[in-house]
Length: 115
Length: 116
Image 1 (cartoon, each protein chain N blue to C red):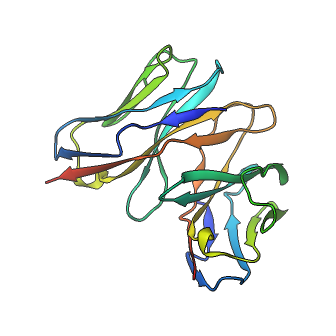
Image 2 (cartoon, rainbow over the protein chains, first blue to last red):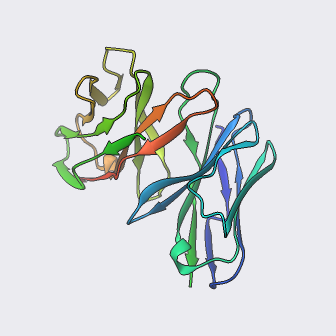
């Protein structure tokens, strides 16, 4: 059963440290999304890629966040330097967008705690 | 920009009964898709059901069905014969079709508790 894989599942780090979250989308999916979930803001779109090209990262704080897809099997979300307000669950999702809808498949998320 | 509103932060239902979760959205688009996702305590996001806006027939998946009212921009989820495993946060989501890609916009979520 194909699934989106995210690592690590949990991450605790100190303020100022660099954090890298990884995502392996489902093989063959051409679109990858990064969402952040907090109690206050709910699910927010940070960035998304289609065919590895970034389409929109307007939801991402540019000064400290960066998202990349080095290849079709890996997406990364990096925070440098991390701050306590970055504490959240970060979800990666992938889908196959070929002119029509395709449900997004979500990973299990990375719970980030910045102290 | 599209917005999705779920006006019920919490709901509860007795096991085996029926419950309806409400969702409204705002868009100027004519072609789009609507989804309900379930997030149990394990925090995994699970697709429950989806609806294409061009289809008048309401989608159904086993015990889950929707009432899609396009003119009213309403998309409610009905869960029949509720089970304890249905306890979860439920998110309504909107997807606009874009030539360069599509994104999901989520509502705030409704925490559903099924009581034994």
